[in-house]
Each structure stands twice: as C-alpha cells, then as structure tokens.
Length: 479
Ligand code: GLC
Image (tube, rainbow, N blue to C red; front, side, top):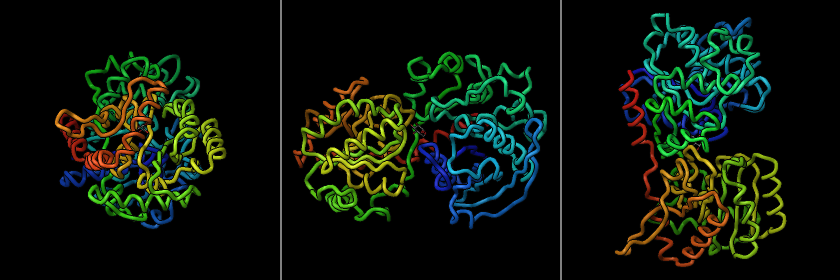
C-alpha cells in the first residue's frame, strides 16, 4: 500500500508540539512493522529546518501551483530516513519565517501547501492509495482532492483519513476569502460552512472516508459540547466514521537506557541511578543539590487547556508548606509565564522556571523528576505523561481524553500488588489535584512502596506497536 502523510510539522525537522512527535514517529513505526508498504510524508520546507537536515536533502524539481489568481513557485526536496521518504515543499515567501504558526496569512500559507501537495502527486508521479491528513493545516488537501481532482483517473481512488489532534484549532475564516484565498467556488461554500464562517476542519471531516482522533476517550468527548469547541453536532452526525486510536511515543528516541542527552543512563532495574540525573538538573537550575528531596516537574506548552489554572490556584501554598522542588519547562501564554517567573523568584531554593521549548532539556528533566504534573482541562492524547512514565517520573493526571486512557490511579490490592500507574483525579478542581499531590508526597517517603510504583510505571508499554497496527487495519479496510 502507498500511504502519504500530510502535516504541518514533523520531528525532527520542525515541531511545536505533539503533532510533530506523532508525524515523526508513526510513519517510522508503520514502515518498520509493515516494510512492504511505501510510506511517505510531506511537509513545508520551513526556514527553521536545521542545516544538518537541509544538507541531506535532494532537490527534485520545481513547478507552479495555482491558488485562485496566484501562480506560485513550489520546489520539492526529498530526504530518506529509516525507509520513509519525506517531501519538503519549498516557497520562501510562505515558509521562510521565524516561527511555524501565528502569521496573519496562515490560512493562505496552508492553502498553498495543500494545493501544492495535490499537484506534487502528478509532478513526482506518486499517487497514494491512502492520504492521511492531520489537523486543520492539512484539511484543504482532503477538500481539494474531492472538489478539484476526483475526475482525474489517478486521483479517483485515493482514500482519505483525517486525524484531529486538537479540536481547539479548526482553521476558521471569514467567507470573504473563500474564493480569493481558498480558491473555492461559492457553490462549494456549504462544504466548509460551519457556525457562520469557513471552517476547514469541518470540511475535511465532511469529505474524509474516515476521521480519527488520538485517543478513544477523546473521540467520545468531542461529540459533547463541553469538549467539541462547537463541532459536536457535526461529529455526532459522523459518529459512524469516527474512531479514537491512542498515540504511542518513539521508544528509541525516548529511552533512558541509551539516551545520549541525559547524564546517567538507567533502566527500571537500576532506577536508583536517576539520582545522578537529579543532581545534574538541580545544579543546572541553581537549586540545592539534594538527592532525597521530591522533585515535581511540569513540562508543557503554557496554554490554559493544560490545566495551569489549577496549578496557579494551589502551587504557592504547596511549595511554601512542603519540602519539595518544582521545575517548570515550557513557554506560552504571558500570564502563566509571569506566574512561574514570580514563583521561581520568590522561592529560589525550591522552584525553577525554564521558559523555553527545548526537547533535549526536557529529557534531562524527565530523567531527574520523581513526579510529573499534567492536570489538563482537556487532553486529546498527551504524550508527556507517556514520556515521563518511561523515564520513571510518576504522572499525576486528570481523567480526561488520552490521559484517562493511559494513566490509571494507584492502589494496592488485597494481595499486596501495586495496581495503576500514576495518581489521577476526576473533576477539574484544584483541591482534587492537591489531594493527589499530597498522596504522592506521602507515598514517596515510603521508599520501598515508591520504588515498586516507579518500576511498574517504567514498564508500561506506550510504544507504537499496537496503535500502528490499528492504523494499518483501518487503512486496509478503507482501501
Ligand atoms: C496535540 C494534543 C495532544 C496530542 C498531540 C499528538 O498536541 O494537544 O494531546 O498528544 O496533539 O496527537
């Protein structure tokens, strides 16, 4: 089978979050497990893509892309890694910028990208059996395929899957740019119309053969108004073609046994070696070097759906009244950045705030931390709780979306067996969170029991193996 992944970010080339992780690891996992398939990925050639990757790319050709009245240059570069072929679409006007998103013309940039993806199939003579598009930035690839290309023989039988990684971002625009920017006819307005504006995600859901999201629980949640960001009626209508498949993580990249980015490698058997990583990060953060102190970590985009309001509500009290340390890594909304800066300023020997996005540093923190906090208000899947588990940082999570599907509350059964793999709470309530933090703190001081839990957490299977199989099964059913 020929499969083409279409996405706006792919690790290790360019990423801002979980979408990049998934597009960087799922194609690899598929190609490893099913090596008789031809798996390719296409993304924009961003200006931020590092020299080491650019040097490995080969220029294939250039062609012209039409977008409404525009005639635009598009270059295609390729790169091969672990049996997967990556295509990079080049147009410096659209993609040579300092950041991936957040520009006034994002709609136009990704309309160009999607138009170019379809044209590219002809130019490089690669027509997939399965086009798998991700999030709103790729939605137009499914829409254009159905509205503009279906009458061409080679495009007739391409099947499509659209994956929602986060329903918060839907690609909503004013009707005024329907023709001028999105190159869509007024008679096709009904396909992308939702809630009084253009909604690209809705259009892709409408046209896709199948829609997936990144965990079974989130698939149910987004059919209700509390989580759907307005799309619940649309999704309920499409429930028959909606499924949740839990993400995995890259078990080679995130492996404490071999990770070159951490000071001391370890496994669940030698988990006591985490202490050396703790010391190293304490030194890096200017915190007192104390092996016995419990280190909490927050590694997150600082956005409100990550549950940071709960943290703000209880953290100062918790820090002031307990002998613990807290390390925060991530950047985002100004309010939260200010809050963590304030906390770190006031409790210099307890709190450190590293307000950057840094993947290597994140692994050093996972390897050092005892507890990982992730009290999200909503969480389509979440990868950090899985990474934290692999590095032996016990997660405290709220029971929502993929967090519910991956982390179960700790308890000891009648026979004395450790059950569950973290601490969880149900309601979006700060005191439920602090209750779990106290429970974890008290277990931490019972060294023997704590170690049993950490070892169990480290042995959970969050690899892609099972989920890659589910995707392959779905592709087969559709093709
Ligand atoms: C988005 C979601 C996150 C998910 C990731 C990958 O970033 O917010 O929960 O894990 O996509 O699917």
